[in-house]
Image (cartoon, rainbow, N blue to C red):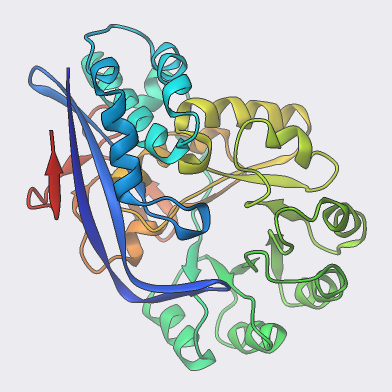
Length: 345
């Protein structure tokens, strides 16, 4: 088995702004695991909030390359458990590897990944489409550019309620609000009542991740359900979120891939919490892996590749929120840009 690492700068259609940063392109690492003439692909993009760069992800994978490349017929769960001790401090790198191995494993079985898991995709939730922070005029323009049944609206400004009121004049779609840790406790509780009147479905991570006391108060007093994001990164966090959030939004790069994500979703359901998986700004490689988890989810945010002006891969498609699976096996992806910024073997 051969490990091939490629890096790309993914260009965005519009400057993407959340409460703590803005960017016009997103550096992303693509991992390929090649076994004979069959390849599996995985992805993890850079993220300054979590101090993850392409450079350190590549270095961490290279340190255990001999173990990664050892020929094996192990299950994805066994493979993940074997690599975890070496990559436990770099879940982003572990995620890219886990996605690639799951893709490869399913392709070798000549099945789609959700078929390996025996999932029924007949009742998949619709994905939202994200509107980043901008002027109200530009946010409206983005909505008009991409009509959609559900919008996730990024907030964290001094005019948050005004923004939602204005956007509501232009759409009857479901709204979801993501403040990315920018609000305080009283602000969140107060906003929840106003936002409920404006047709908002839930609030995502309104408080800073470490404010568990505040999260508990918001959980008890909010007029809307509250979904954890930054507060729910790894498997151990699901239990912490119980009785502090109504649901969890799991990011594959933060927990180490689809293998631990499935365990987290199972645990959240045992706590009767809502389940969601979200994406980063990433190509169709990372997005397509999420699609195979849809039967386990109440909500999904997998529009990352739609925000790009140019994708480097083909995979699942979104049609007005509905996922259309690729005909390919595994996660259904195909790398189409073989001219990366760097390539490492």
